[in-house]
Length: 148
Image 1 (cartoon, rainbow, N blue to C red):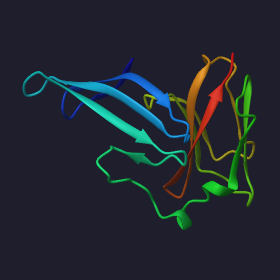
Image 2: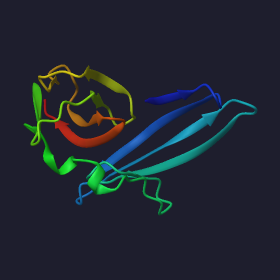
Image 3: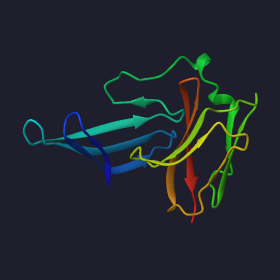
């Protein structure tokens, strides 16, 4: 699958495979094909921790301080889901944006500042997805599983 196209470097990025580890982390790998200024391919590998932090496996985790993100107070259920995902925040946060993404980072659904926090997943293929919740330019991510 094509993950994304970069207009700055003229590159296409491909997701090759992803696996969930027993720890709940996800390892994803793929390759990039750059066209500008000359054709070149190289591989990439990332790790997404159970709390949604991304690590390029260079020992430099990209993570905001825990006290800034209310991820411990967010629950998404049922997980795994077959038709709907319900999103609850214990402190009643009204999220600015809720997104459902596939593992390549492609946004499949987006909700903006809505009182009812639920996403329909019945039309999706079975697999692993990510829900990204944004408030005041800070994001919380949670992994979810779609069952057939």
